[in-house]
Length: 310
Image (cartoon, rainbow, N blue to C red; front, side, top):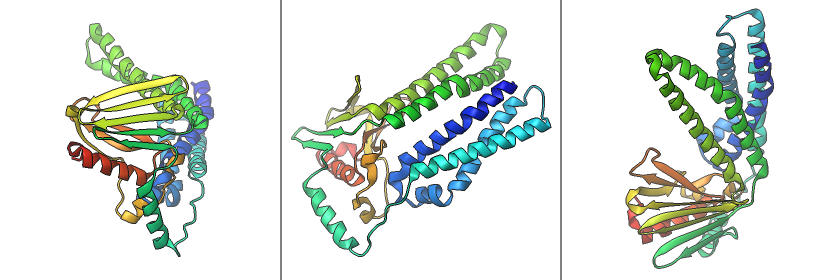
């Protein structure tokens, strides 16, 4: 068990740094949202301390479950807490970066000119075909190998460390409530859940190396196709199962939406499709799209297919 905790001391800071970096990098485009901005700038240290404390308590309880607490384990807890919190903090710091300066002297003029230009054309990475029967959106974004490597590293940590330990704890607890001849059901249930979580995490990692996304919306269905790095994914969602299509984020002020956001450098989706059926009631899509462009596309979809509005 001592060797296992040493492994935690090595792996946890690396995983926490990558986790903080990815989280801040993904939420960086939402700097205009007050809550997100305060959380990752003013409350960054507090957030990293809370996260590091939770992780340290969890691993220390597992480490001390069999032999109880000793002075060496308390010291190990303190060391793990400092490493986890510090790694999370610096990961968020580097992931968030410096906030760009905004020239407020000519804000009204800039906003008006941006609005006019956005009404005339889309960026080079975005093509929108508004035909009589459908709205087709083609998004091309660069591959993000560094972010893919970070996400893949987290996937390896989950598959080799975190999920196996949590699975054994869950299995040991659940087996107490079932007779001996039904213990295999617990293994099947927990094992299936672990495989599902690993599959979801793996698909999230693959999203970073998909460089083209094609979305076609019509009266009958919404089709989403992704291509990149020899991987392809095609899914079709019938219109009868779709409750509505919305933006993934909403802002209070119109001027905030009209300002160009750095979503082109992000891998975060901007659209949300809500389902009437199934276990997962939503589906996000539309990566590397500017928030203002996403709003314009939604207006096109609503005008042509009002059933997707709400």
